[in-house]
Length: 58
Image (cartoon, rainbow, N blue to C red; front, side, top):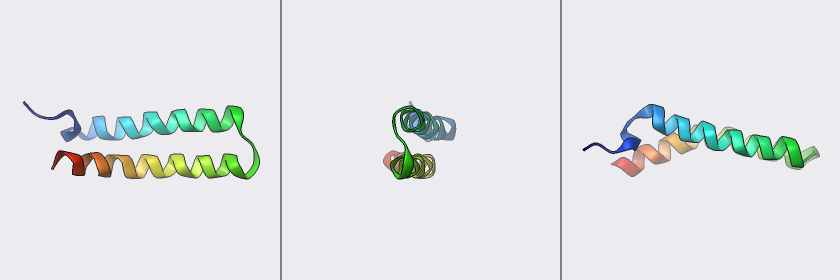
């Protein structure tokens, strides 16, 4: 039985879903510099989460 993280759709989907939650919180509750930092963290999450999950499978 293969691991779900072997599928790239699952890896990228998790990163995008988490980033969407972070962006929603940033947009609804934060402002100014903190909001921009949260948006940057969300962008990093979209890029880094799939790579970390891919290494977790190995």
